[in-house]
Image 1 (tube, rainbow, N blue to C red):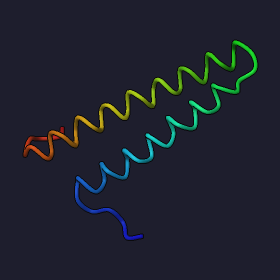
Image 2: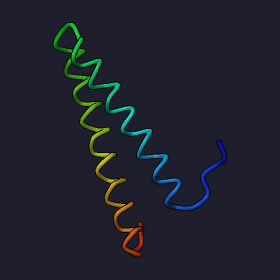
Image 3: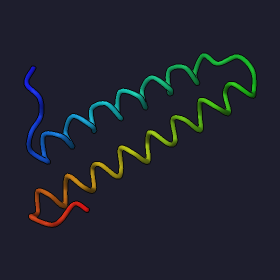
Image 4: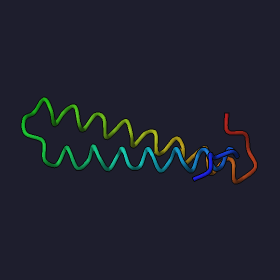
Length: 69
């Protein structure tokens, strides 16, 4: 696969990575044994969810012709 070059391609790739990380932590949290591990996995999942939202907002702004800074 070619390297992404445009801002949109980079953000699309980043979004897929963050969504994948979110799903990973979600699966791990569902099978976590113990409160400490569950708490950690839930926090990591929430952080990835925030990343997904941020990238989605950046992509929407880019598609509307706005700055993504």
